[in-house]
Image (cartoon, rainbow, N blue to C red; front, top):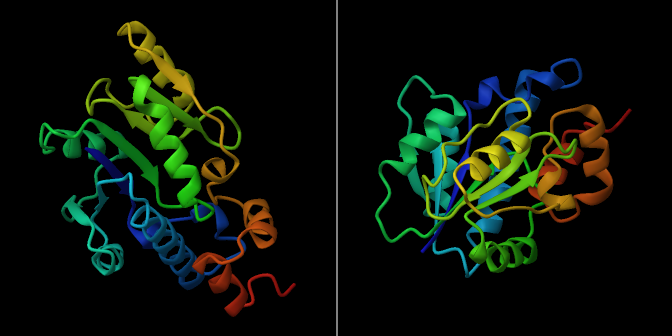
Length: 213
């Protein structure tokens, strides 16, 4: 069984690095739109057997319900990313063979990219898709879940590879332009302006005239 989970922090705390350019309303709307794009894509990939979201945010839960995804509710006090993943791993049924861990801020995610990823991870215990800078981890695949403890944070790409190596596991680093573009800065938004055709995220930015200036 292939399970994809999406990690969503409280939306009123999302995208704080954009606070000099976007209002709180706009940042919440951006987070809302990106989550929609990610869940919409994952729900269409036939080789992903189930999709879940890990969140304590009511707005995110409402979006998730539109797609019928499983909700791993963190409770009122949102967990850290690694704690949240451990929380999920401890509750999973044994038939989950591959756990795909996605962020909620990669609106350029595509069905073809995920279908290809599912095919490629079958021979690897740990698969790492780095962030755009190459030092962090945007997407992590654990086969099976819990094969290593996750280490999201500073230099997590290297940390995940080291954890796999120390455990004697076969690991793989896969570079993807669409999965690597997490939206954190104004430069990311400007890049999305040229590449995000057909996404709810780009539609939100245009409707709210984010790029008017």
